Length: 122
Image (cartoon, rainbow, N blue to C red; front, side, top):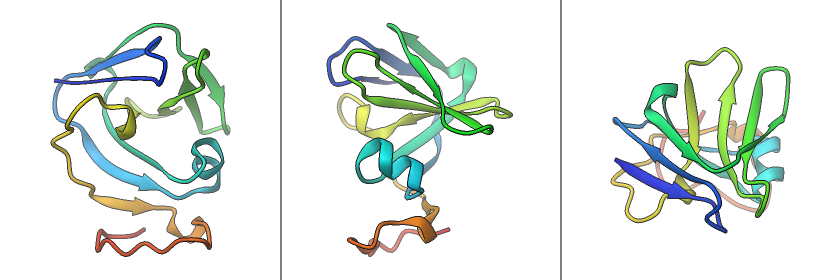
């Protein structure tokens, strides 16, 4: 199991099973909400347990973003048609045991950095 929390600790989550799709998103929405990029992995809805209040922001007609209402930590991303939820890799408490699989929305990345880690880009 993997455990994580927001910055203030008001929201805690536990992931059961093996997370999939570890990625870094470079889209404009993730860059604006996180201040740079957003790293995540996803699990089936049933494999994520959350303690504490999560507020959801509908970022588009296709997805919403879950955050802590106390400290503002961006913790979750949920596509409306998806049966899985993405969680922030940066919110994991302790080692993750995961490896990055891909960079996504790289055409939208900021012009102030390069992606040079050799991980596939989409």
